Length: 123
Image (cartoon, rainbow, N blue to C red; front, side, top):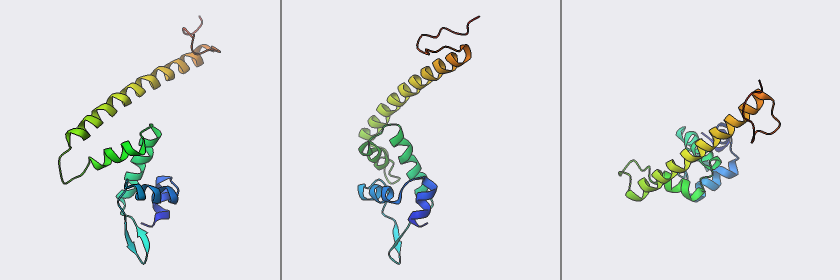
């Protein structure tokens, strides 16, 4: 796949893909007639990077995570510790999001103007 196709499918700018390549987040693709030719799985990898970045993973953390997923060797203790820490962080984010979602849903059902003090539907 050419870089424009990959960018379109992943919803990223081609400059972002080149930047990720420069940082080593994605492998340098082979070149055909001087143009990058990405394997189809590059789209999934870029989608993962995009998602992780949206969840406030730093690019350094994303690189640590991806480097630890080397098929050749088992996960290192450092990588496992990193993954366990991120799981705890993500679980806390999920709880926070669920709490805010529940507050918003509750305030919609009762017509409150202040979701922080809503106690439920007025009856």
